[in-house]
Length: 495
Ligand code: ADP
Ligand code: GLC
Image (spheres, rainbow, N blue to C red):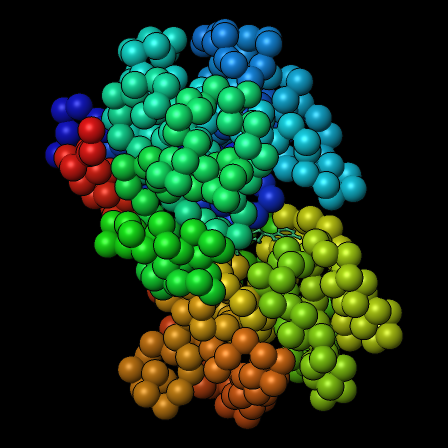
């Protein structure tokens, strides 16, 4: 039975698929609110008005104007629209000087952070806090919960408690501790934060202002995107300096594994694939592989193991560990299809291998949504040797597409990929391959282990594929966990 009064949630995020995306946070911000809607939650997403957001939303109309923000002279306009694919409602902050510029939401064409990022994301945070207070200009809609995501929204709980006297409870989801939004101390007053809280038990971090620390300190509840990561971030290796504060709140950090959007990532209906396939009709995957080889200029060889990578090319993702192994694997008959962008040294290193190995290694530098689906579907294996991975979505897409993930045992990778071995084959849980440690040697060893089964035991391979493809990877379970967390947070809110 539907509750008489639906819980109201303001979901605050700097990126939301399909409106704007740089990584997995966008995928989560697009799909989790939709899943929560199906559980009866009255949810609205709050997002900055980047050009692609303004262009894509349906029924966009002005709903309010906010004046007097300390960090920007001009008033900001609030628009409301609907995401076509999911029908979820979105509130957009229209502030042309802050958000309407070419390029990435975070960096300029040279890869340097936009200098006004503190202003851009404090406006996002401040507007969220205002919308959850009695100063909200929205008529008849006051959230019970404000769900914040990552550092860009980290000041929201601080503003809610310190300046807006918000009536809602706040949750901060930690998707990646490596990004914290740390700026020099003078920003605190410019952004309208009360100076007496610039202290250890506040938003100060080694004499600087930290957006993420503010969120962790002031949020009523904390969550991360996998159980393993919830524990890892309380250690020096993964906490990026905030492990002490996180350990103090250790018991309260809820690890909720991300789900995937099955309407978007499903080989049986994926519009980017020349042939659809499923666990019971997997033959189509061969045709997708053939088409991918053709598209990428790889040799047309059905038997060559095709290894895929779609990734940000950064230290986190551990793909440098693959470099010493590539030539050897190619010489042993493997093909590679890589799509990604990031650190120029990694882009260059992979590009050299593709230049030296025509027909055997394809490297596409850039961002390409259709190709990411085609690689996911057309490859036999997907490589993710991340040094840390809060959740990771690509390994789950790999599971859904019968493209066996080869991963390091960290964060969400450890929580979603079950290594193939005698016992896990027998109890039908094996769904991929897990490295013994984050090293080049361990990566080579695990790839060779996978290759042996791929080449010598096709039936066994099919079974592992089927185990992953038949898993329920959707948001069904995790969205309910968020709803339970919302309820608990409201009940136990610290005043
Ligand atoms: P992260 O958010 O740390 O980058 P995730 O695995 O959670 O890692 O999510 C990455 C998302 O970004 C996936 O949806 C993946 O397909 C997508 N992605 C990453 N790089 C590219 C790219 N170059 N082109 C298209 N999609 C990409
Ligand atoms: C971050 C993490 C990634 C996670 C994503 C969505 O970008 O790096 O592991 O899947 O957020 O939660």
